[in-house]
Image 1 (spheres, rainbow, N blue to C red):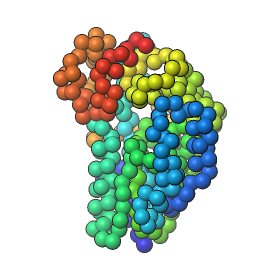
Image 2 (tube, rainbow, N blue to C red):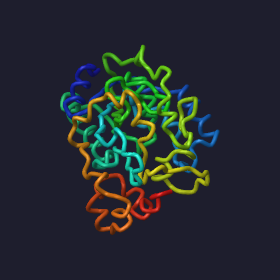
Image 3 (cartoon, one colour):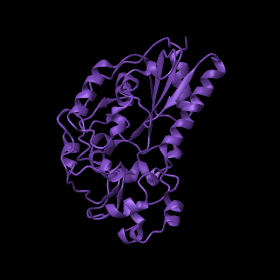
Image 4 (cartoon, rainbow, N blue to C red):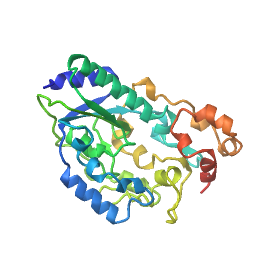
Length: 302
């Protein structure tokens, strides 16, 4: 059995801002809500969400003998997350300005695991971030990292919602487990709902990806629901920028999430005339190659 404080200290030492630990178990209620959301067609072209549903909602199926899940969060909030000037035609989601978070989070989780296995050599583990079938928002809520905001994202009273999640599924029990937060929430605030130009945010605190700008500018094309991109060419922060918790949160402290370039210094003409070589030099280390330069150019003024 591993002491809870040992895990918390290890995660904080490698640069995470929030840490919680929960038992590895089936998330039955969350799975029911997810299945209903899929049946209503809200997954749109994200067909990968329909695969590995059993594993997504039961971390014991991800690691043989799993007993616990360490849930970690790290802020990426920068000044760009506060919003762009009115009329900007080339807006980029602020998380996408830093090095690909999948790589950074995995490296940080591996560092946590190394620290734990140094004292507990029998520990078995796997590290995950959002490219794997893990219900990480549900786990984050159970671990006390925040609550599900109206825009479906996890909101923390100190960090807001602009943070990445990562999970370490481990084979050992922990001497105490965290519980969900109480006494906080969105209240009557609906700023995120009102901020979405396409009405993608549903009343049940989920998002219809058919109407989501972030999904439309990044993920596989094929959805024919007409929407406005509203100047966003990669991702979207519209439902986060106006959130009071994000407005009052301090900017990220972990330098691994520093923006690699200034998006406000690139207008539409700069993007439209950019070569593949220039794009690779500018954003090759970010997540933006996932969409590709041609797709980004095509998103301008839609």
